[in-house]
Image (cartoon, rainbow, N blue to C red):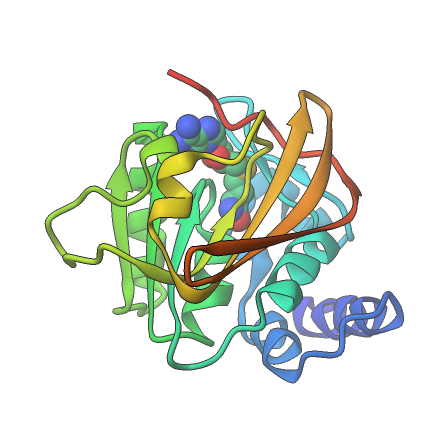
Amino acid sequence: MRFEDQRQLLIQSLQKSGISDPAVLRAFAAIPREEYVAPDLKNYAYRNQPLPLSERQTISQPLMIAIMMQYAELTSDDVVLEIGTGSGYQAALLAGIVKEVCTVERIESLSLKAQKLLKEQGFRNIYFRIGDGWNGWEKAYPPYKEFSRIIVTAGASEIPEKLLAQLADNGVLIIPVGAEGYQILTRVVRHGSELSVTHHGACTFVPLVKS
Ligand code: SAH
């Protein structure tokens, strides 16, 4: 079956699983996941499962990405911080919806590969940093101090303080929190100095490594 048709089937399965945000569904329809997986795994690109990248990392399961993006309630005004660039797939999905995406990855080889690919795919609103996501965005350019949305794509032992400090008023942080191999998808909304925290089920991500 052509990749395009497989992509349509994946979107139908996301809809059956409760994904209804039109912007999220449009993003999945627009981005060719087969470009972001290893060449020998292209035929598996549209299975609703995580797939291995190099360096023992994974490209997340499409449904889990979609759930995170739906809980983030993204709009075209948002400036998003993504922690864990990995393949660049989720950065691409986000970049089609929001104004700008800043993405941080600790493994240099993965970041460089994603930078090259996303440039080739024509994205101009994604900024990259190789570094420790526990610190959030520390780069001089673009000089963002706060983000309206923050999405962490690795499992954290706790919510990083610096990410809370970089979350704008009315901003939303989506992060898997828990032990290695078992986390709870957690949503934090800032209302001034108050944070409201809700929990949205179990999930499994590769660890957000502490250096
Ligand atoms: N969003 C990615 C999924 C990547 S998996 C995609 O769409 O493909 C999680 C990524 O988080 C891995 O690439 C891993 O190297 C990275 N990571 C883990 N700990 C990190 C940290 N402390 N800082 C930055 N990136 C980290």
